[in-house]
Length: 297
Length: 303
Image (cartoon, rainbow over the protein chains, first blue to last red):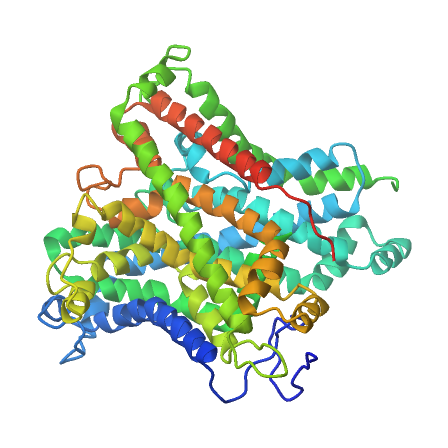
């Protein structure tokens, strides 16, 4: 008996695997069992999100009524208007400003550090590399109390610049780590040629190396967009007066205990979820590759 | 090194290094220093008290309970997540129709990975709100309405001191499985085909192939996953803070170290004491990472 790869079978994106060929029709007990288990988990993952999206158009009575699974009788689009008025518009703006600044700074500084560490020999190179690598191991929570007072000392509590700088600092370890290994895989000959032709080191980096690193930048850039947009622990301590969207959701949940207006809460949740899901569906290969790739190395 | 490149290196490193040292390294170092003081966080004056904070911590029943809760999460979350993710990854890879041509992956592999990974990209408050609603304790709660129909009765979930922590654990596991599935799947597809060919020629079945080949070859990845999950379970702050009543309730049954740090540092004006808790958390993290990496070390298989 030999193992043949079914040439007509659709090969998977993770090609190269021993069993990277799909089944084609036909049933067997194992196949049915596999699908049953996998579909059950898929339902468990997707249904809560789908239910939350539908709940954004329901009234509180329908959400917690006799049948929470029923579809809304009337689509309450005003839930979204209410959510917007209750501050979600401001929270979203805060999130967008901070993420825009944070991701731009993270990508710029992260790839600068990674490039220098990957391509230049100098005393302290390894030390700086390990300093950044160590930052990936420990949860931000260890240092949250002193961090608050550092930010307060600069007068930057509840400011855009405070959050942006902190986001950059805490995103650097992963970005440096990821881009470092990426720059190492790029060929050196083109950069050498540019230097020989009289381009400066900085020009070579911005004009030659950075464009060549675009796939890596895209992967880690999307990772940082999602990570900073979803950040909750840092802003909830460092920006109490200027909440970002994830904080706003938590605050709105707290206020439901008095307001009892759950349709509005789910509308806010939908506003927070939909952009992320759209980005994920467009870039899911990069997201999955970026997140898991760095863990494997 | 070319002439003038030192200046270039310095110019590229200066700003990012300053940011990193000011906002990441220095707070970590300061946490150790403040842990030896009675600083309130409000008044600028404080006294050096030696290890008094740590002695107090040893007698702090609430903090000890919090460590206990973190340890329950620390055992449960990695174990459940890794087992589920391995099973799913294996089903994706070999659960397809088997015939004389060997074992195949299931159809729709891409769809499953897309769906399972979804919780990983959404923020903790979004997930916490959704699950807090799903586990509403009334008879009309989403989960209760289903279990009631199935004749399983209803449960109080997050409102029950006995099971609230396990509800938190479930949400952590639920959110992580997709990520580790994708991770294990990538590692499994990195195993050379001829190893499986040889096993199948020798007549090995699916289970034998899994335990004798896949699992040993995946060991490095599983180990990494364990450390990451353990660190996540030691934190667990965000989910508990948003999802549970109090937060940390009912009856402190879901109180974790992160909540204790936040409460002492920002509510009770005990910044020095909270820093000591941070230091304890730091060493716990360090010990767990070291123990996991040493205890489970085995010979690396190169292929």
